[in-house]
Image 1 (spheres, rainbow, N blue to C red):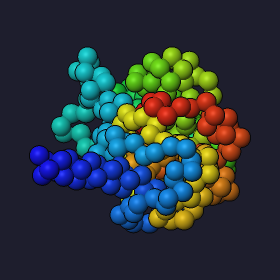
Image 2 (cartoon, rainbow, N blue to C red):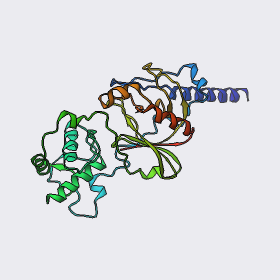
Image 3 (cartoon, rainbow, N blue to C red):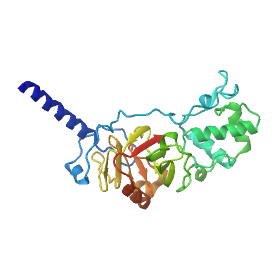
Image 4 (tube, rainbow, N blue to C red):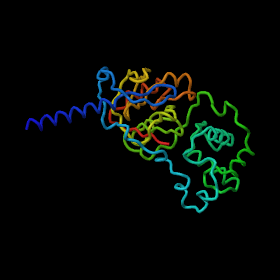
Length: 296
C-alpha cells in the first residue's frame, strides 16, 4: 500500500514537471537556431494562470492542412493537375525569394491583392490558375516554364519596394473552416493576418508575422493555455506583452521589433502582432481555453 502511494506521488510530480517544462517561453526577435526550453521563472504564477499540459509541442499540424494542393483542389478537371511530364518551377507549399517575385508580378496584373510573402499558398495558386486560364495555358495552378516565361513577358521586374513594401496592411483570407464555430483566433500564414472570430463572425483583424525557417510557428488547432499581460521570454529575455500561449512556449504577443522593422525580422516561433492597441483589446476578450487555428 505504501509503495503504491509513493508511486502515485512520483507520477503526479512528473506530470507537474512536464507541464512546467512546456511553459518555457522560447519567443524573441530575429532568426537563430532553436534552443531547448527551460522552465519558466516563478513569476509565471503572478500572471494568474498556469501552464496547460495539453498545449504541447506535439500538437503540430502539417503545412497544407487548410490549403489543398493544386491537384487536390481541382481534381474534377483532367487538366487541373500538372502532367508528370511538366516540371513545376514553383508550386503550392514552396517558399522562396522567387515565389516573392512571382507574387509581386501577379500583383502588378491585379491577380493577387495581398503583398508578397514568399510563400506559395492557396491565394497564389488561385492567381496562377487565373493567369493560365486567361492565356490559354494548362490551368493546374503550378508555375511551369511556359507559365513563368509568359508572366515575365507581360510584367516588369519588381522593384525592391514591390518585393518588400513598407508596413503593408494585410487583407485577411476567407476564414479556414475550422474557425467558423466558437471563439477563435484564426491565423493565416499566407495573408499574415490574425482574425478574432466569434461564431463565424470576424470581430477584428490585425497584421502578424511568424517564426523563421529555423524556428517555425507550428500549424494546427490549439487552445489558449494561459495568458500574461506582462511577460519576458525565459530563453531570449525579450518582452512579450499581452502574451497568449497556445502551443508550449509559442504565443500570440505584441512585438516592438515587428512594429519597428516589419517583415524584415522574424520571431522564434511566436505569432508577433505589431498593433499594440488592437492586441490589448483582443487580450481582454480572449479567454483561456479559446481556440487558436494556425494555417497556410
